[in-house]
Length: 318
Image (cartoon, rainbow, N blue to C red):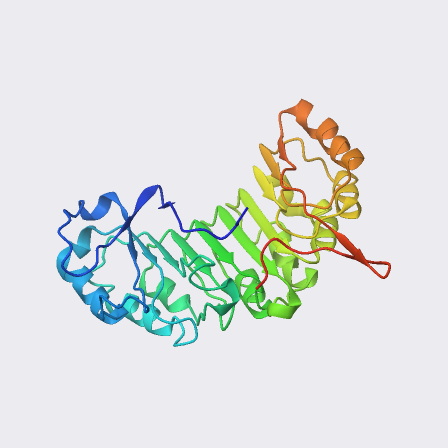
């Protein structure tokens, strides 16, 4: 199963593909959908680049009514980074006065591997839109997120095959008093994922994000270390859901998690794509499901051995 797919919705609004030039298609009301803006650089029937698409979009809809924007493919994978996307969003802030949610990098594997998506410093979007409630980013290459303060951001999501530790440290040092949902795909070192458990420490402490109710630390090759840190993390007491899926989670990490603080207050615990034995999986269910915790242990990963070395992989890397 692919874990990198086109968004079907954003901010509770269904995704709608803004039509190509000349298409005879009635447009929905500006605030009723999440507008997906994307160009195909290999389309022989259209020479429209993203800049022209962006201008046509702003001239075709009521910008003041737009609530959510999904940025898909903006050119060839190695052509240029998302900096010019960020600049266009910043420049349009007075016209997009109702914007509440932005996702940059909605590409599937058929368009570009996640490591090919060239990102940039995305914090100017938050600075330009002080009322923005949701920001999602796919791709960690070139991504930067220096620490900032934002009063209204409720959801922050980074999907990457390798997320720079600098980004994790920037998030951890940010003041986000309204943040309720944080999802971070840490990835692997081979694709730039050099964050450590120490980088996560401020996030795992109590008080950094007082409104946080969901924490996802996903897709990591150090998932066992993360699980052990989470086992004693003060932030867990305030959570309603915890997601440690898509990484290299083994019996060691799950045993540490079970030996830590109580998790029976959670509504759900996501441990999909794991390398946990049946016996330990059974222990997790027996410990949590009687208390009403929904535990997801589906999609077990497949380890393989070579010259006595066991190899395990995250769900998403390249």
